[in-house]
Image: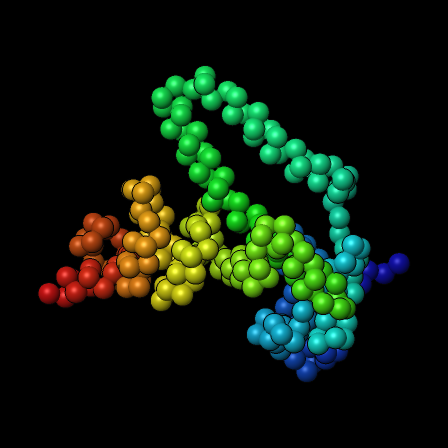
Length: 272
């Protein structure tokens, strides 16, 4: 059996529009399921269709069922692929482990009395991190709910899972969209090991320079754990990065050209 791989001088054909590489000079690999969602399979499509998919999210939608992955243009299925499930995957075991997690944490509380003074503080920091991570896990669940059912209303699944958290659909949708934005911006995701609260992340997203805003949040929280969302909101509006090629940076003392994080006040001070 011959391999489906291209042989020299064989024209590529777009999996969406059907045009060949003789008509469109550039082709891209498009992940049927986003890499951030665990996708590995790609389809070969022309650059025009690739740009349209990412620019017109209302027109092109990805949907997932139990065993299939679909790419739809409006309500028309244009890509239909089997859904990859890891070998040995057991949904029942996974759900059981999630259901057991709260009891496991409660059992840990019985051992608090054995902690030293420093241990109590360290445990507090660990539990605070669990609180911060909770909305991220919730949002990823909302994100999956939005992918389900290529026909009918996707809202039904999202509404049901949001209700389990006591949230309205609009809040669940906003959290899913925020998670998606972070995953599509590697500069931001590389700075944020744990995602901040949604109010902070919205400020980062709307900042003139989101990467600098993310760095500001991480730096401030590391220096002062009591740094608040209100303080961040007041400070983030004027933060950005600018190219610095001074032999010795007046702000951070770096000796090589680099991006430095500045605020409006820093810029004014440098100009005076």
